[in-house]
Image 1: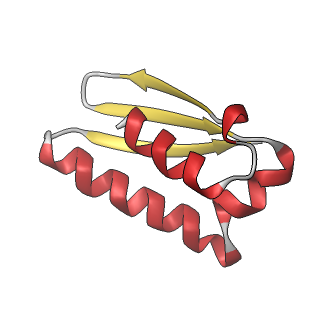
Image 2: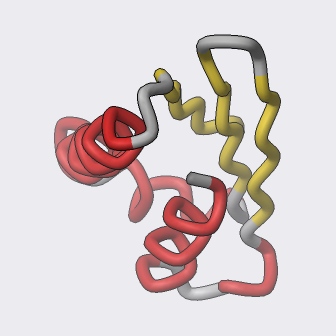
Image 3: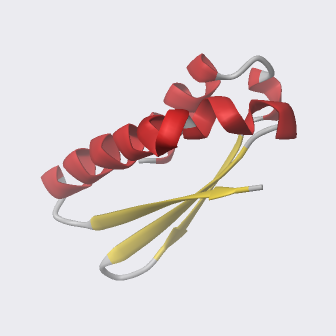
Length: 76
């Protein structure tokens, strides 16, 4: 899951070397924290949160295949 979010985020931003993804795994749920440069925050969130919502949808679909739950948090 971490690699999926990292790949998508690096494709979206202007500064791919400043993308940091941290995964905190629990028994049932994994929390994936995404940090990007301040100037790229708008690109990751998108208009009205559409890009962030799409990333969360992909993450949910991928995590369902491995029978886990994953939550994406975009950290400023």
